[in-house]
Image 1 (cartoon, rainbow, N blue to C red):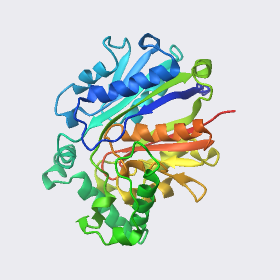
Image 2 (image 1 turned 90 degrees about the vertical axis):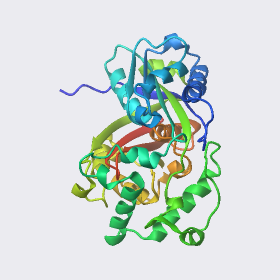
Image 3 (image 1 turned 180 degrees about the vertical axis):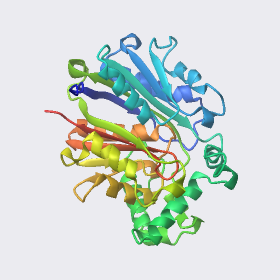
Image 4 (image 1 turned 30 degrees about the vertical axis):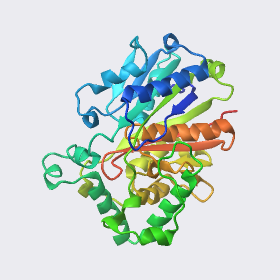
Length: 355
């Protein structure tokens, strides 16, 4: 008999702005968010029973750089602490599983990254398969261009479709105080821009950003004590495909389809979806994979095309959905996070306002 999952809710959220360059340290970014969620809930650091962070030592250029980031949590290290070398959305997944064990009720989740000191395109190229892809210099932008070309060749999208995604994202981002890139641009103006890595133009790519985010989740009655309107995690799942793009149909995201199915996305309509669209063609693939229709507002924050603090971007998608549900502008939503080349690994988190 499958046990009934424990009720877990998002009770507090915080995110920094997405900065083109944040001149202070990554722990300073984290500290802003941690202090914010603690103040919002009235908790102190001793009340947090589990702390987990998502960040990238590889991006920082230092082994065990995440240990330094714990300075952002406070002068006393947490008793129970974990780390994922991934986006903070996967840290949320681990925290959610940890609360299912039933021995603790409150967890702090952090995601952070500073891309500005280095060259992310070159750095992440070195994380690809070392035998086949890395020697070819297959960086994320080149791989995204290959995926975009696959969509075009299959007749599933046009460059105008890509531009429409960007135009809407930038327009919506003007209402997001945390956005880095936000301005009106017509589809025709965008199509007139030169290629960066054909068929992608510069605006089809995310900006280089520094930033951080934090979330406090709590179980059952403890969540109700900490928030007047907790946002309940209805379901969460993540799936992965081959790290070799040549072994996949790049016009689909099978892992997103599976994650959505196991997270219960189809159980009821969703009002809002925040998708980790790092490159504009990905939105078209994800809309199809998640079965999102015209009744779902997609990336009202502007999404990653408006700000992309690596290792916090996915967790920010969760925050954006939770904030809208908490504010009453949506009753049910889905947040999506991705990792790896060409949507290799995907996480889906379905949330609602409960009763």
